[in-house]
Image 1 (cartoon, protein in one colour):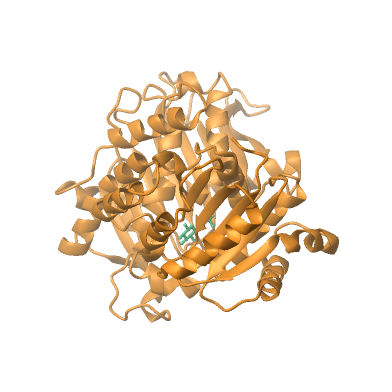
Image 2 (cartoon, rainbow, N blue to C red; image 1 turned 45 degrees about the vertical axis):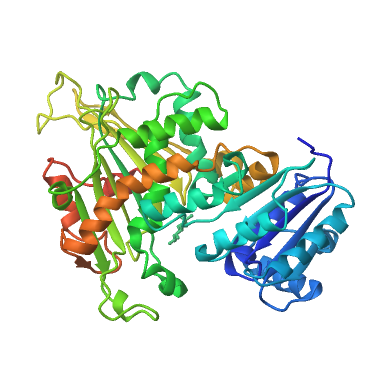
Length: 490
Ligand code: BG6
């Protein structure tokens, strides 16, 4: 709608890290690719006293440091005049009126507006209320959309409350709750792999799949974000959003169409089918860990019990997945940075060939999300020049080999473009975010109140606490990281 109107992109929190590292490089790259609207303007808003020129210099410095692409100085010189800065307090009605006047003047009539909340979450409702009070969210000719950064709430009650608050001023169709994992090319590729091929879908169920493992591991610790992280922990930071989003994409039914609500309906169905882990099940199905040295990090309480690692065992109660465990783990200060989904298939029903352990090696499909984006497939083949030896062999597809090293754009690039085009498929809907919280809440409550299971400590540069191995060992399984490495390096 109204694609030809002038479009303003207003970023609250414009002097912050996210704007410099992610948002501006992404917007600049969209501009270089000719994907921004014809008439656009980017207005940074924040407390910091920048002039327009100082703001541009600040962003140009960020670009040099953080852009993952090469660009020409002339391209920046052509883009920079579209950037402006508005100094204002996030709680001051008069400052919001000034912002509104500034935007209306530039629009000279009517225009579209994308507001981006890149501030600390405590300010989201304040800003949205003041935008409402200054009549900046009313769609009178041009569209009005608001992108909301994570974290969206800190538990189910606060997320529900936040939804209620913002729904007073905004329709759900105007709200774009962002989860940057959904902007990753390889995360979107989960759906393409599943639904643009015929060979996977018939096997994608409890009859053929033994279990699913999702690992999102990081090598870095909390770095400069300890102040935020220490009050949040890994379950809120990674599971409620990114990991549960990955589960829903792997496990969902084919949507009726690729439209936002069709897709999101299916994701919500999966989340609603996950058996909540609660009460007596928490000790058995969850592991929480903290890396040694975390308490000595600047900004962390010396007796902090904030988990930096978690592993969960989930069950999905539906026809497709009954009895197929989903093991999830994520943590900081681990051995490798890797995000991967491993799908292990069942053993063949009958062992036709002689095999030393009277067991065949099961097929494994790995959706490798980062850093070496691609798909790996392990299957069995006859050893050459033997009577009937069976060997595991690997087939691999790497994005970088097929499309070049720089083929994968920054996830914010895709998400910003979608928000500008009004496509909310890759953004989280109100019910989705609340359903995800309803799964995480009982675990958080048990961890925080009853200290069950106890917090365990792990050495940095390992795969986390040994209790996470026990979680799988109880089912007679082990984490598959070694297989993943073999697959990568053969
Ligand atoms: C963010 C978390 O959402 O995701 C960070 O707040 C984490 O703690 C980051 O480091 C990981 O993202 P990626 O894209 O590097 O896997």
